[in-house]
Amino acid sequence: MFSKVLVANRGEIAIRVMRTLEELGVGTVAVYSEPDRDAPHARRADEAFLLGPGPAAESYLVVEKILDAAKRAGAEAIHPGYGFLAENAAFARACEEAGVTFIGPPADAIDAMGSKTRARELMRDAGVPIVPGTTDPVESVEDARRVIDDEIGYPVAIKAAGGGGGKGFRVAESEGELEKAFEGAAREGEKFFSDATVYLERYLPDPRHVEVQVLADAHGDVVHLFERDCSVQRRHQKLIEESPAPAVDPELRERIGAIGVEAARAVGYRSAGTIEGLLAGGEYFFLEMNTRVQVEHCVTEMTTGIDIVREQVRIAAGEPLSFGQDDVVLRGHAIECRINAEDASKNFAPAPGRIGSYREPSGPFVRVDSGVEAGSEISPLYDPMVAKLIVWDVDREASTRRMRRALGELEVGDLKTLIPFHLALLDTDQWRRGETCRDLVEDRAWLKQLAFPAPAAGELAAGEDEPAVERDYAVEVSGKRFEVKVIGAATVNGAGPGAGGVAGRQPPKRRERAGGGSGGAPGQIVSPLQGTVLKVAAEKGAQVEEGALICVIEAMKMENEISAPVAGTVEELGVSEGGSVSTGDTIAVIK
Ligand code: MV4
Image 1 (cartoon, rainbow, N blue to C red):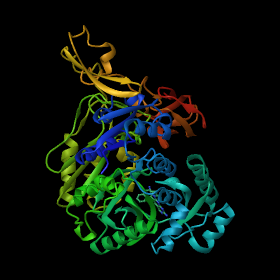
Image 2: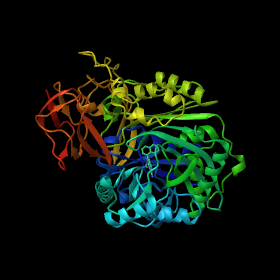
Image 3: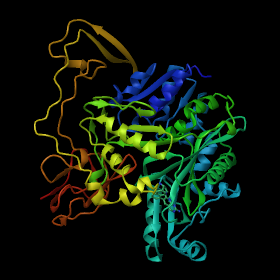
């Protein structure tokens, strides 16, 4: 086993990985960006190293900086978590070249699965069912038209070869829509993956997203840990995940588990991975493989009792799997709700900001994975997930009740989150019947009833802390983080350089925020984030309905829809397609 591991990530997944490392008796090394100096993940690790400024491109994505931190710390291995560098084959190779073990799959497997056309070809050749369509790139709209007429038919899905998770995914219902869809998918592929190659799939109507968790060791053993259903998603962002999948019976479970194992074998996989697939009309098709530990791995941990991250670390250290397929038992039902800083009533508008009071639920079979605390800032620079709430119970119905109870206990002060959305969704007949709930997550009227009450005027945060005579500070010496305790007389106002300190932090003051795409004067839409304007849907002088789309801003590779907070006339429009916006900029004024 390793003696020290660097966790190249932030937030909840960094802490999740460190928890397992601590249990294994492995030393932990964190990395952090400037705005994350005081973040729980940086404080928790045995050692922590500054990477650089907030933007991930200058910190969490800089391979040399991470390898340099690993070297300084003497870490023998790096766990990438998910996102950032987790599925970057060049990073996996750079680790091995630097003599550091990458806790993940072989770089060749990341490469193979990163190309969706190559992945489809590999799977087809291994006898794994793929969605009917092409495995070779489709060069032009004319070629696409021919293949569709001859083999696939309409509706058709056009997907970017470098894509995944819905990026570069377009649908053409008929030939009339083909050119626009083809070009849209190619353009998005070029923009996000520097690869305009696209392929075609038959578009399956209202499928379920069902994925299989696999574990493969370095000794040729591969097992699956059954399936998860992640059909409740919006704009390809998963919102709720559960295991077992409500639409999978024991016979199908066995079949798709075997497909997952076959798929992993076909790429010479090692580590934890997920085979994503679509379930439609009782048929299961391979979609893509995620070569990382996923956000939703926790539901599988709850139903199987297996610590997936621990197995990942053990596998990377060369140890064989400590159990076989027959030892894996699926028990009860687990659900995970992603608690994002988003306003579902405003079409899931980003709502970054500072968390006021914070209280996590507990009680039987409740798990919270989070990387925040009272006073933490949910920055528009990073993923908007505040926490994951996971519960287990004997069956789906009981698990749903437990989730609603736990959601009621969760308190995230001063921030708009998906808590009301989850509470409402889990109380619908669609959820009870195990449907995909696609109609609900796109139903403006249904979402609007989830609106947050306006904060009372003049509402203030709690009073000042008692003056402290002992205070903890975080200091950096040559970019390495240390915690020091300063003992002495309390300062007059407790502010000064310790204001961002470890234990002496003052409770945050309530302040105006740009969250939810609104704020400032009534009708003024202030940008909640910094990014590029992909699309402007409103015109100056036009009448808009409440909730109408104003523009789409791309930030952190996510497309964020900004919609009108009120009905009225667009008096000002501060954005143009292709332009950039900063946090706090006026997007539009609606009177
Ligand atoms: C599809 C599809 C229908 N037909 N592919 C791909 C990425 C993932 N986020 C959703 N993806 C889909 N791929 C074909 N050929 C429909 C979806 C889809 C979806 C699938 C399951 C559950 C919810 C979904 C929501 C939107 C799109």
